[in-house]
Amino acid sequence: MKIRTTWFAVGALFLLAAVPASAQSKFEIDPFVGYETSGSYPIILNNNSNGTPITSLRVNGATAFGGFFDYSLTENFQPEFMWNRNNTSYSALDQLSNTYIPAYHSVIDQFQFGALYMFRSSEVKLRPYVAASVGFTHDENGGGTPNRTEFSYSLGGGVKYYVTRHIGFRGDARYLPTYGSSSNELYCYFGCYYASVAHFLNRGSFTGGIIFSF
Image (cartoon, rainbow, N blue to C red):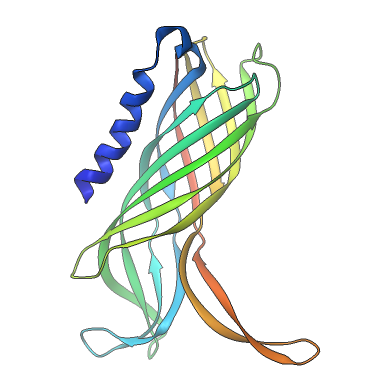
């Protein structure tokens, strides 16, 4: 699966490169590196291989890399695809000691389909933007732990700085949660009732990279 997800991202790059030359001025390819923060979600009380009661899983913060692939529909609006990978690990919350202990390694690939809106004119070199997307996150887990593919989305923004028409720099920061689990919780408002509540890995993504515009 690691090979397939990597080739999926590489394939997107070649699809963009295959468009006719007359349309290439509208495309941007932005490889990046950065950091993604940790996040946790509760699970149904479970025991690990040592019999330790586990109540929560946490993905640990890790270095990230990947790329943005943008297409300019207008001067300010760009549909966007993002691939973000981080080689990381999960920790489990030991209910007895209330501390996190190592659980298993994971390679996390996040695939997001969305758009961004850039402020200011295209004649200006420094252009801030806001962005949003939806997609999915795939965990390739080690230690015999099943792999997972779950819904995810992002909200954020950043800035692009164009050194020339074809080269620039980009800084991006966004909230990038992934669905983790659901549980029934009691709510009391004009009576009490149980409702299903979704729990997310609430992670932050901070990246910087180079813009190649064609």
